[in-house]
Image (cartoon, rainbow, N blue to C red; front, side):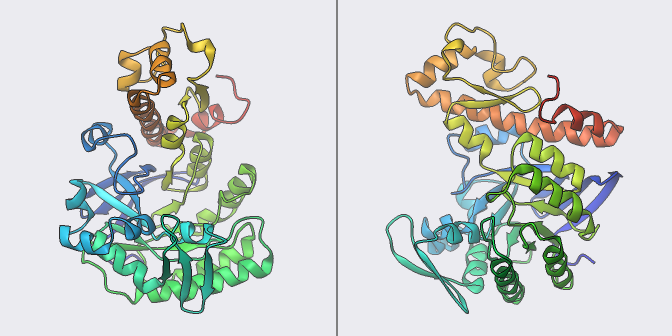
Length: 371
């Protein structure tokens, strides 16, 4: 059962899809929800006023990056990231474990943690569950994540077993750390594409005092169909009264399939990263590359069904001109569009669960579906 500062209310279930609310110190979050990624405490290319206008209930920041800069001392001095960034809604902080473990040539495991070299300056650091929790304490996020071991896929059974053993030990150490009174803690289930391993890891984590659980170790090299299949086989077995979070996912199709499997929370850099590369999402998950010459004289908006600033005021031709001229305004407009698309998709999903039409929406996002 839930205990602690983060609570989840299940409002409706439609098959495995769920409509709910995550209650936090900085406001209620309607789920299913997409969390824009603000790695360093800000959404790339956008001001805080522009982010507020998009109306996300929660954004994600990264513990690893905030530890390296601006550093734990400044975060403590400022009274946390909410005050430093002047953000008055909820923050979730990833532990940074994925970033550390992705530094495969710059990190080394130790029984108590992991040594790594900073990707910024090569300085050496020792990441432990206690350090991760102290950083997240200084950040003051509403939801903190445990430090876990996230192996890339494909992975051997031996590597997955080592990941689960290490992640369980580290999760318990995170639980034992002091946290701010408003900060909830989520556990992370590993196990790759092995359903039995996922179930064994889950069985241990549900006995720990978490307020939510995440599915980690997916979208790390496997085909999307395999990720979807694992979610459909496993997610509904997670506690009903916990928010369920699929980490680092994904495309619009991934989000729809995740909801169909019972996921409540998502994050991904895809909308902001694609915007910086000149690609936007339109329709039912199709991609439009603004760099294409076909858009040079195209006076239509990016997406005629979109109500974002970019689509209401500007044409593809104008935004393409800005992008090819390397004007930062182009990246701002494309980022606003992509985040609007993702946030509106979640609103559509929530409405479709409410009115019972989710499966119709889901069918429209399948690869090869008619636009």
